[in-house]
Image (cartoon, rainbow, N blue to C red; front, side, top):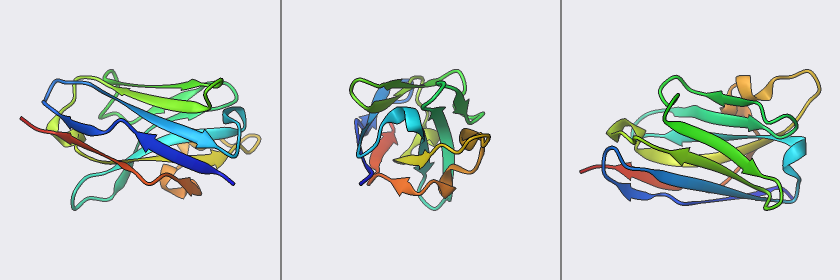
Length: 128
């Protein structure tokens, strides 16, 4: 059974940093694409970043390029989202999502909201 558990959210001042973790169980990272979505209050969920388990290819939304870095630790079966230079607009609930890789389908460049496995979410608040 696929299970995703997020951690690392919290309250941070503008310009600060946080590192989110997504601990995966029930599957190996190499077989999946893992993404991060966020939902700000009153807004729809948006894809933030994604990493492909097999080749480590990555995707970033334009709004976070240069500030966020996604990475994985296969030994720990965990994906991380390092968030630097945080802005109030980054506030929201961050969800880790996963989808099994399909040959020839660049999953990280498809809507992450279609991924079928979700974590419970972790709150990130950027405020002074």
